[in-house]
Amino acid sequence: MELDLAVTIRRPPAVVYAFFVDVQAHVDEASRSIVPELEKVTSAWMRGTLEYAITPTADGCELRQRQAVMPRGPFRLLDRPLAGLFRARITARLEGIRDFLEAGQSTPQA
Image (tube, rainbow, N blue to C red; front, side):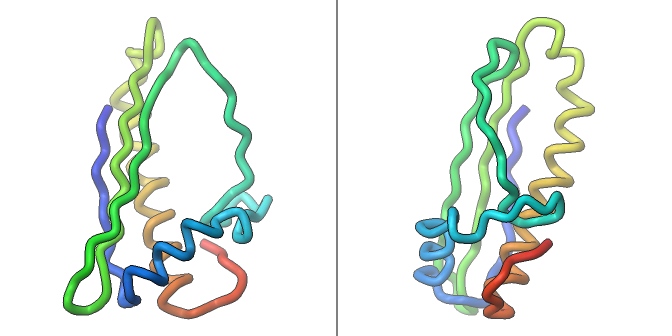
């Protein structure tokens, strides 16, 4: 599955970039955090890529997340249901990042 989602953020690209450079400072164990604490586990059943792009706009910038997840073996049957779940989570995350940066908060929450 390939997902390509974007959100417009009314902040300069440098502010958005700085957020990602220091993303570890925003990690929170709360399940609704925009930067949750995650553990990367190598899996033979899935592989994927993740890319962020920040493009200047007249009002600020566009933050785009491109993600490809390729289930293998029996997990290929879950491709469609997983795509819907991933799309909803990515959309919520991008909107949370936008809301956090536009509000100028010091503690991110979704």
